[in-house]
Image (cartoon, rainbow, N blue to C red; front, top):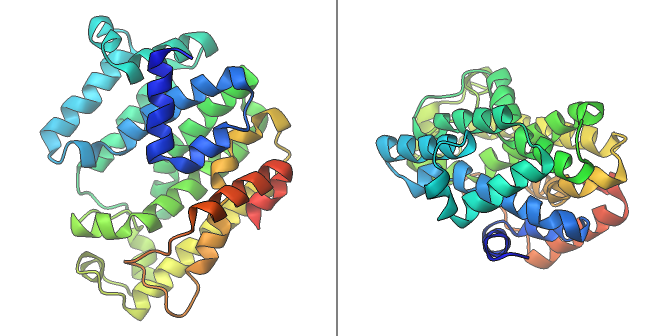
Amino acid sequence: MEDHFKYCATLVREHDRDRYLATLFAPTEERSGLFALYAFDSEISHVRELAREVMPGEVRLHWWRDVIVGERTGEAAANPIATALLETQTRYSLPRERMVDLIEAHRFDIYDEPIARFEDLQSYASKTAGTIFELAVRILMGGNVSAISGSVAEAGVAQTIANVLARLPRHSARHQMYLPTEILRHYHAEADDVFVMRATPELRAALAELRLRGRRHLAHVSAANIPKAAQPAFLPLAPLWQWLLDMERANYDPFRPPQVAPWRRQWRIWRAAKSFRRIGG
């Protein structure tokens, strides 16, 4: 494996252990492409943490957009993630427009606008996490993913809901609202309670609704007829079912999400690799 791909693998191992472990179940020759994709996603999806203000965030995203469309060849060659990503894009003919749409969707992250409806969260999920699942499947299967596009969409929403719940304390601290306003209003929960990290009964009810939807999307992925070659792309979802159930406990604090021991996460990924339907339960 070339140095830039090794760099990506190390980054994924350190910052996204579930994806790293899941990728080990992919064919050896496809792993470097997956590591490049996941390293790129780590850069893009954490832009708010890497660039804390709007302008640096915009500049960072614009730089990545230019890299994808081929306008910063010299600078990209000096960046190991960009180098690995561009080689992966060429090797697997990954659609540039999907990658550009992914970057554009993450512009939402650097502003403080709320998500109004659950459909808006689904749209965001489709363009972000859903795109990563789609590109991972393309790497593994080499081409058209239309046969399992529904599963890709379901996986994207499930992953996004999990991210919203896991990052609730971080989002609350910086007054970002990924919880759909319509769900909060349905249960008479207040955004201000989220921002001051006050777990009211109304907020708990709204979060329970979101968890239920997350489990439904996971169940749909589990029940789908996904080709074995594509399954490693979905294995990072394996720890989520039990994690979502852990939040149903009476002592659950939404601003201190439960932690799953690394060995349990690894075991659930291994178990799903042996029997894919266990992703949903």
